[in-house]
Length: 137
Image (cartoon, rainbow, N blue to C red):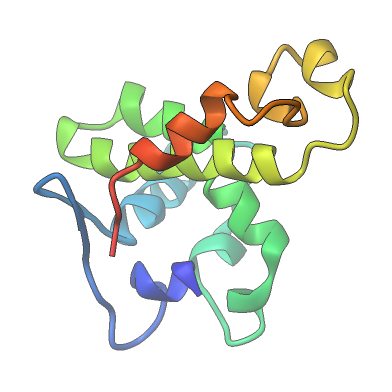
């Protein structure tokens, strides 16, 4: 659903966050640049991620790989500041997926990721982080 809102199909829409545009073409640019130069900076991304079909729009695996921390870092490091809003969306979605997918108490410690730790108190900092996110829509 989020992928189709970003413009992965026909009748595209633009999202705005803090006055900066979040558009599908930012993701397309990463894949096209990789194809041009032959280097893989985002090893899991392929044409399948950006040329969406009705079936692939519903594929959670593709969404998670596209809206990942790796893509967020790539957009921040290799692309202009105009793409940083898209980078921020990817980083926030990655953290949100991690919060929802915590499996056990030790996974967050092994992977050194506090967002993979399960909630243990009502005053957890991650609740504040979730509340502080500005609405995208």
